Image (cartoon, rainbow, N blue to C red; front, side, top):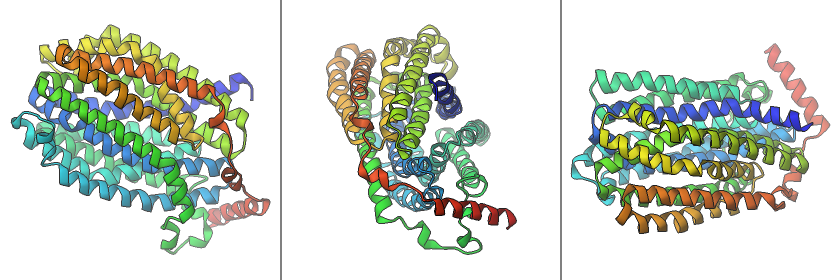
Length: 472
């Protein structure tokens, strides 16, 4: 492939994924905007538990990634039957894992607002919101696995379209539950839950029934009967999922733990600071979600290149993705700095919240290019299956640099100090990831990856299975 062809492929894979990522953030902004027009208290209620929700969502995402990255490796090695087996095993594993998280969510929900030092008037609403979201975790986990498997097989359009559709569902259901049924913050949670359910069902349908390469009916020996053994994770797939997913889980857990600690620093500053921080994070997400879209494309391209044992392609796609991500997020940072007041006014009518949110967004705009470097490089390392060192880099950066600076600056500078700490930490983290990517150890292919191959006989069996399915 020429350089231009690689860039075109990266862009084509990134665009639908960027739309999906932006749609996901749009759901959070929709919730925040609808509740923001009810009052600052409702916004602070959701903002208080948002970092805990991100923690649970991040852990579900890490578990799903442990299996979806394996799908990319098998697809790159042309072992489609192996990819389908990984998907079946992953479904059982992610549901089991997410049910444990649901139980934990129910256990801590009554106590979390008090632990974070929030005003007593928002305790009940925050507890109810967190418990409803906890119910949605198994649904979200299955949706993440199905979407990840489709993306890692090269099918970016379907999961991207469905995630955009989920955003539309969220608007409709939130309006119904918040403004027609008058359920307040709980209504936002119910609307999001219903949107998750519908999207998950559609995602599974397109994966297991309609996809040309991954539909389960291609395994003709299973047509017409239920074989539960195919859904029990094998020792090998579990170990590999653990190797890929556990560093991500640890990193997400520790990073969100730091975010919760930072929320504890912000909570005593009052409801205006909590609301401005929440709205600011949601709006900033619009800037860095394109980076996550490019990161997902990089995971797919690097993962399939690894399966095909092409180190040259792994490195080439990594740097093309990096340049694309940093360029787009630098432009988004400029737009955020210029239009910060208008963005804040879309989600709240409180003048004090708008003013404070505008000021912190303009601080953060300086960090967007280096933030892109850390996001895209991490996606590259996930695709290569080497996630331990990057995860340690992430958690060390946020705990040592960001949290320390936030503790030092918040007492004298308030919310501005917290966001200055965030800006400095993101620039430091981006530089560290660029250095890591410049070294070539991450693209070495171990002996384990050499086992993901397919024989000519297996290829002939797949062709035969496809013919039988069409006749069936």
